[in-house]
Image 1 (cartoon, rainbow over the protein chains, first blue to last red):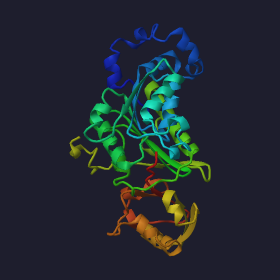
Image 2: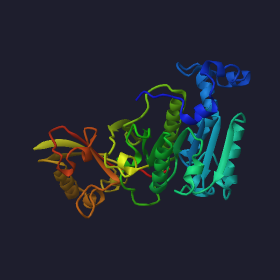
Image 3: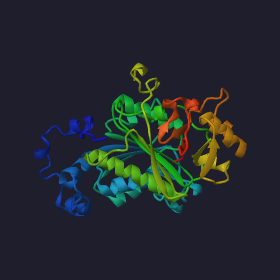
Image 4: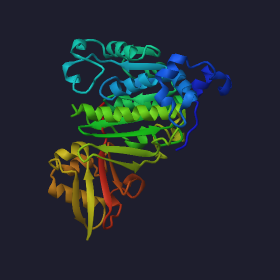
Length: 270
Length: 93
């Protein structure tokens, strides 16, 4: 799907005509730092400025959240709000490269904020140690142009999915299992939502995960987020990407809106 | 009789002992396909279908890339060389 940027929050912060606004917004240092991506067709200085102005919610800084946050930070996405309610544990270290052994016991949000600010001191990182619930999500997502799913359970994903629908901002779903992963991009009222795709949550369990699987899916989500912010390429909308590391194959299936969806159908009243 | 390929993903591979693609000879529809899978891999039916016999909400079945929920569900007919994907939701971060 071809899409239009900017989102509403971005427009609110940037009322000036784009061509005027971009002048002098990227510093010489930033121009040099991001030179290789500014050279990408369609990205350019204007795209870099959009990245600088964007604010995204990264829900979860674990397996996928680590690479997602790292690649958005070093790409110059200007405002990262990272949310997690967990502390670093030994069993996280096989797949969460934001953390090291010295971080065990620390709040993930604190350790991640420090690491991300070291990687890119020119961006703003808001670390929020909080559980994502129906009560907290509206404030957590406030002002964000994009909601990125990096949580480890479906109840929290449904809460994020609903918040995205209510706020009218895109929601990038991802999930992994072992050497496999899936992702899709949800544009409220235009595409199928997460509830349309998976009406019920899977059973809760401790999942097998390889770090590189989280890395691959997290990087794909980061790329999709950057494409959306800049307004380039085709988004993974109404399609579910399936990655299978066992056979090293990517494939996709079609997804469709459910006219009876309790979350996003017109009768849902969201 | 139709020969089809069924791709098994995620936690369902525990039942197939890691096998990712199953070739089946199926007479009619997705329900027959599930029965055949259950014969070969006991426990598969319960993972795919709920107590009422409907496809679980956390599992999607696709025929040639289309979700059978938007087709005829378990009654979706199969023909030779169809590709079936059985995909449970992946929840891990």
